Amino acid sequence: MKKQTRLVIGLAIAIISLCISILRITDVIPASPKKPKYVFYFIGDGMSFNHILGTEHYNTEKAGASKTLRLNFTQFNTRNFVTNYSASNLVTDSAAAGTALASGKKTGNAHIGVDMEGNELHTLADVASEQGYKVGLVTNVGINHATPSCFYGHTSDRFGFPKLVDDYIASDVAFIAGSTIMDMKSGPQDPKYKPITTAELAERIRNAGIELTLDIEQAAKCSGKRVALVANDKENKHVPYVIDRKGDEQHTLLNHSKAAIEYLTREAEDGFFLMIEGGKLDYAAHEQDAVATFCEVNEFAECVQLALEFAKQHPKETLIVVTSDHETGGMSLGWDHYEIRMNLLMAQRASAIQMTKTIQQMRAEGKRNWNDYKQALSDGFGLWSLVPVSAEDEAVLRHDFYDIFLKYGPMVDGLYNKSEFLVYDAIRILNKAASIDWTSLYHTGMYTPLFVKGFGEEKFLECRDQTDIPHTIASLMGGKL
Ligand SMILES: [Zn+2]
Image (tube, rainbow, N blue to C red; front, top):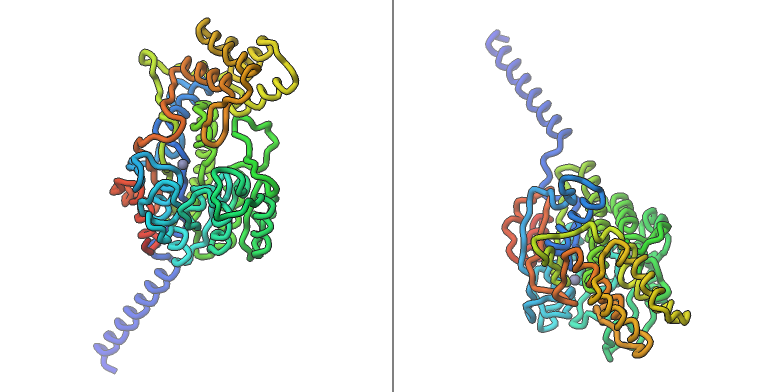
């Protein structure tokens, strides 16, 4: 063989070897993922700008910090805000807003997963399943309450709880967790459905072969089966507010979220889509209870922290979206002379609802001395002990106190719970002393915030309405709503 030919052959072999090595290297180093493998979708129910900022000021005061302590998600680089009016009302409810966030379509208030004509809508949970993701839904209210059910359910009556249980059973949702299963006695009744208890609905779920359990560890470790984790499968009873916890509660939004992540990480080889709702946050704001609301926002942020820790283990393939469905309560920070006095909220130890229970208990025990009630309000809310109460305000409270015995009945209706007038006025006096005020017992039409971190986060800067959020998530997951 000529020297020249040998050189050409040698060169060819070298080039082929180099190509093989490059191919091997690219085989070892994975290409950048084309879509997020893990999607976290956080919905703070009723949480808008002031609930978040108020929580940061409250935490700062509590810690005695000189600089404002920021919540984890407010530090995300991608931040936006969106409109949230429904197709029927300028002020949305959780059903229409949940549908918007789950399906990317505006619908009327009280509608879940259907448009105004009743047509069933495609949801993010459907898109996730089609794209090979396993789906998880976690809330701290009922698993068939408005927000979670918007991901699997279809009804124009948000209180059609039995139908929503049937829709859940028929869905692909692999893991669901919450306080309870809403029964058919709670909320306005739909004549289409016969009354049904939580225990009966639980039985229906078990009969469908789903592992319905109250055991958090069992839920997290369950393999090869769909899981429903609830704190109560006998009666329609919610977990207590964070502020009312005694310290030994296992059924919390945080623990349920941990269980969901453990289950999904193991069971979902091709990735997961996990929606986590801070549902009781909305309840606390309906009751115009600032500290109870801030404590719920804090637990919600702890759940976001779980996602952030998870993302550290799975960089480049995790997407974290944090938003809200609407604002609740019309909360304002600083009605009084450019001030917010968070220090006056430090003595609050009980939610307004817990205080209502205390007052009702005292009445049942036959206590009729104003000083006993005054002491209860001081112990639970810090009135008189930390918060000055004017003679005028004390007169209002004493009037409410006499009404407790004279009238028995009229209560302030905060949608989900009813407060004694004595408690409603006491919490109003407390909040106003701190320069926090509320304008609504329901929702307002204020913009809702959006915070995003991870895979494709820049795409969310284009969102203008809450319906844009699920379209963006669906598109990143490789599907379409
Ligand atoms: Zn809501």
